[in-house]
Amino acid sequence: MQFMLLFSRQGKLRLQKWYVPLSDKEKKKITREFVQTVLAHKPKMCSFLEWRDLKIVYKRHASLYFCCAIEDQDNELIILEIIHRYVELLDKYFGKVCALDIIFNFEKNFILDEFLLGGEVQGTSKKNVLKAIEQADLLQEEAETPRSVLEEIGLT
Image 1 (cartoon, rainbow, N blue to C red):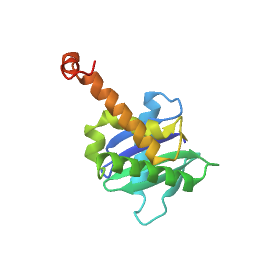
Image 2: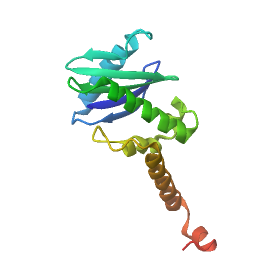
Image 3: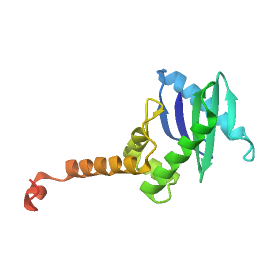
Image 4: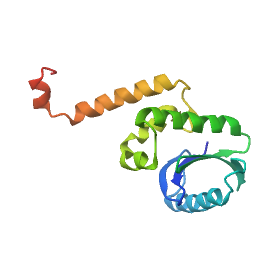
């Protein structure tokens, strides 16, 4: 996978994850062109597009487009399943995920990193990914909790 973008129906970028080294200028140009290409595609048409020397695989979920750019030899159906699994993970974590969850919980975007590493799937077990996310949340809560409060309740 080259990159993954999440954006709204209005074309507002909500999340971007790049797995290839590009300059910021190139990323902005690619993002603009990429988003326009996907939004111009009719809703009842296939979720696979050829774009430049890559393939686009996308799925719309609620008001968000989950899009991946992959190389020509990669399997589109596997990427569609990866998108589906990521949406399931977000739904499990946030309840029913929406664009606002992505916007206002930006620090929670490590959920994608628990699932994908370097554009490759780390594991397919939702249970294991959710367990890792829970552990990360606990670490974050502990880091935010003042030491005096921890001492007071006997956790130090």
